[in-house]
Length: 188
Image (cartoon, rainbow, N blue to C red; front, side):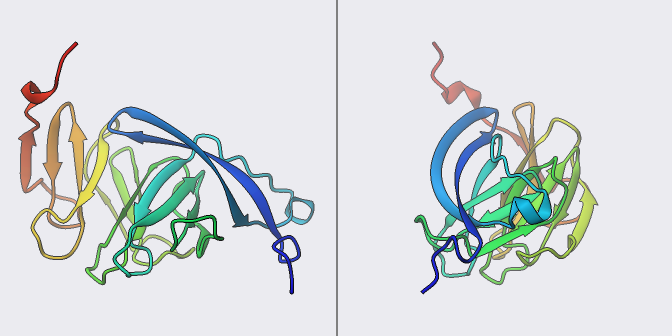
């Protein structure tokens, strides 16, 4: 029986930081992730300032953890310390990660929003983006959801207290624009 070390796995401490509507959430946890040997690749792995995200990666209806770390993805089918089922590099490393069921197959896949440009994938692997399009501008925060109930997630942005949502994963004008009622937030 081989050990995780024999299979080339390294125990890594992941220090995860996520930006959610301007709030910095920090968490740390230990996780085994498959890595190539730095001795053979010259690579080093620093998980500081990574982003946490969740999704239905395998289509079982249970949201599980994922991490986006400088262009690398680690997605786990279990909410535990097991080795992530999906570990790959894809999409621009300097954007904000998103996850959604873009095609309605019951499985979430990843994407990146960078300065108004969206990069969305239909598979969690190293293939290039299936869709690349413009919607939003620098400084917008990406949001994802099934806005029209068709079983497919689509994109949106949050800008200066206003939601701009599309029912299609493509460039174009938003189908819905509205402000969140701030009078309901407690002040002080």
